[in-house]
Length: 339
Image (cartoon, rainbow, N blue to C red; front, side, top):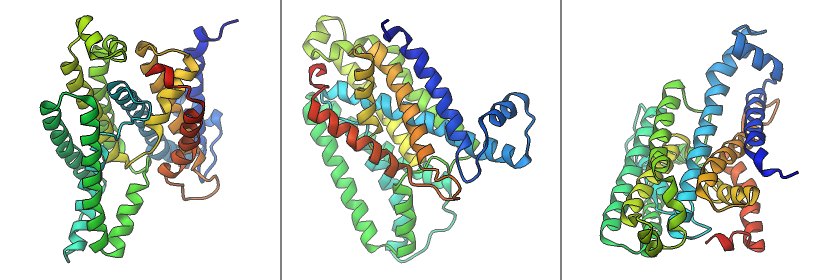
């Protein structure tokens, strides 16, 4: 019996189980049944469980879903745009721009001999969004002048390298406390956001997905080259702006709120191609969104260290999971036929 018609229902089921697992694991184990009963009935066996689920773990699970969707979709867009299987959501340097904004906020004061007060999660997110927007504007100006996608890829990498160099200089001159604060942010975190910040991240994710939703049929033609796309009545220049804008909003917003999260945007689109055995973007976009959400939820659950109050940085867990996947794909060359 062919499994493909049941892949999406199975994936939705896995997503639900991943959410339950993510909600239950942590320094305090909460049974699945109590979580389901508490959420749907409002009656919790313990008040502490209600506080833990509603004010910490449930927002964190939503952040994992939003980040998994955003990074996977933006990674798939960049792989299609550059026709490069190893392109990811950070290839345009937008994540580095978010890192620069946060680095200026956290490190600049220490580097120049004065201390900044009032640094909270809102200030960090605003600084990250500002830095990402600045680099996005620079990439957009280059994209307006340069029509070749490979040249734009090189320019994006150069933007990222230049921004990373500025961050390195700030890190060198900053104090130990400020440097530690920035290092912790750069490791990534899904659990530092309140409900209002989760709502803004959800809005940014929705805005980043709008261009994909309205242009989803055009992505398949781009895989065959811009000349073929033009013959099909598609405007590659318009698609270029939509993809850059979508990726900028998704990758920049997620990095600003969660810090950099590695490998999800690169590995997940390939996993979707392997599981669904297709290059059709009408299937790959929802499939990547689902797999990305599941993968990030499971990585966050794996980093919970049950029975211990601390958690592993999400960037470390995704790197440990994603790096073997990408290496295996390179060795087997399963993706070569799609590009």
